[in-house]
Amino acid sequence: MTRHLTTDARSRLVLAGHPNEDWLVEELPDGSFRVEPAKVVSAAQHEYNTTPELQELLSRAAASGSVGRRRTRV
Image 1: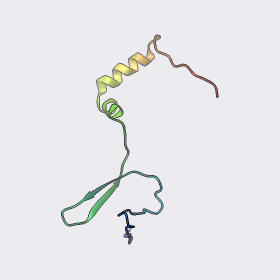
Image 2: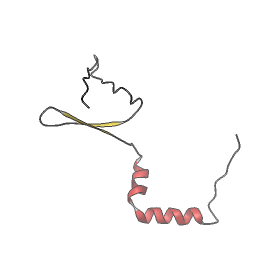
Image 3: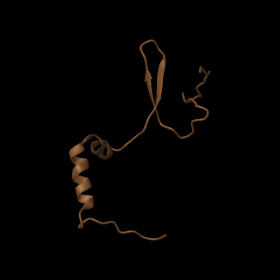
């Protein structure tokens, strides 16, 4: 689907139907733009997601009897 979009005075675009979403925008050599949805994660989360040894270590630690979470009722 092709849409006509106009930037405002601050060079911003509105993508109708996509409120409060993150996007990666790449300007290509021919002047066109590639836009794709993005998910932003912290550096720590990225390290966990890409390091199986860390996932295993934290899984074992969470399963041990010495680690717990205090839960409070609201």
